[in-house]
Image (cartoon, rainbow, N blue to C red; front, side, top):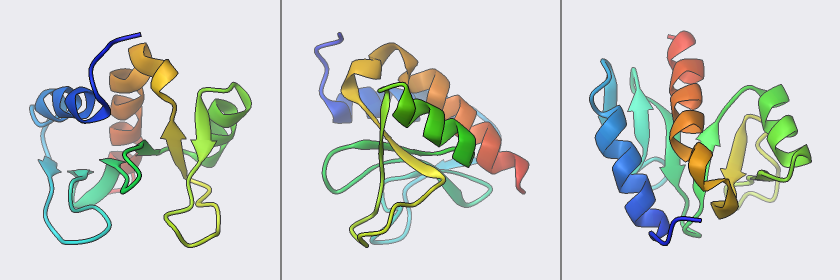
Length: 110
């Protein structure tokens, strides 16, 4: 596993994905303040708990959780957000690929 911190790994993803059309970073306060967005919609972020969080299709989220690569995300509301998943640090090699997948998923809804 890579010895970089979550923030360092996320910064590398941000630097890569900002090269894609319609991708922006940051903005508002609160939810999405340090998020990657495509067409203004959040697809990847670091949560307040220092977790890497992505928006993916519900079935993909369920598969990542079942496969042990992800955890449910609830945004402190106590209710699982079915299209959001926390990616475990052990899924290191997949972070960029999963972020691209999230970008394509959210971007396709535009």
